[in-house]
Length: 394
Image 1 (tube, rainbow, N blue to C red):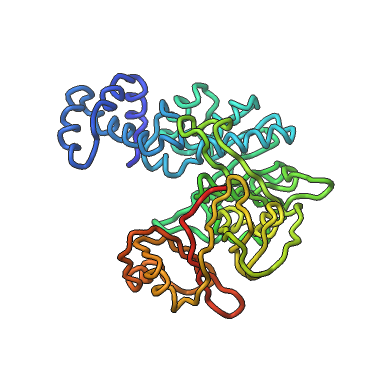
Image 2: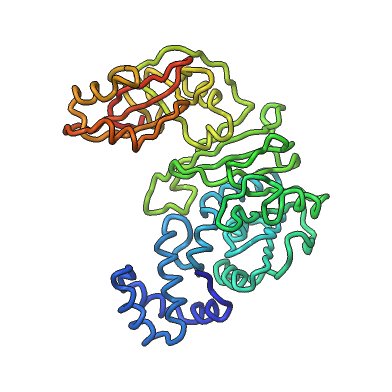
């Protein structure tokens, strides 16, 4: 549900309303009573207060807790820690001034400002701009079309809409605004364009940087050649940033997360051979960026099949999750093997084999007391299953 400019102004002017909402359950069961209670305090703005309060609760590990935003805006926003990492990257590249031309509630602007760079933001939505002004605490925003250049800065950040009519956009030309249109609108600037990770980036001439947070792939950011990182004389064209929260009480600070980066300038010479002690399923950012071999080489792992992302090793790398192998069986033998091991619940991972984990669980009819994992993968032309101990982290 969206917020109007009047609602944003009212909520910003009355922080005590949100303090009152924080004392309420705000569940589906309590919503009618909670709404009536807040109408007594906030009048016609009770709905807006509930919207902001529930949005804050849904984004507690994603956005600052004192910001004003709607649930819709929270879903669309970049995790603040990812925006901070991008701002630091730009700073390390020597960038001094940036414009976010699709700024929404101000996440990127706040992060860039935090890093000490000069930054401005623009959007077409006046209510979102008002939220951004409140959230950043500075009047460095203007209403402007992302395709009508309004700022004289060297670097542009943009986050085109990734959905249309409720469906995820898969073609860069269908983004809103489209990728070609953004490039054409800012011909003499360097660009950092955030996109959905599932798009086809094969024609992109700069760097494609895929990011995940706590195992969930969040975005692919396209950097034009002037923003590409260079390692030992080689330009990076594909990279992955894997963010893992270490301190759950400070999920919005870079100092409270572990960040691992991989790129295509790293070595990728690895073996393809039989499974060792552990099976490792690489993070989605690594897989989406096409860096499975580079990741494996960095951690002394090898592939089970050169076409499949499942890896193996005799030890789990520090901070990396994996599964200790108990036995290897054919797909048809899994049910019998699990029953013999007294398995009652199983985490199922599948790559390269056309099976549905939910269907398999029903077929296996697990009734035991032990928790296990099953890694189903393709080796050569055959589907193979590894019965494993539960997921553990090295």
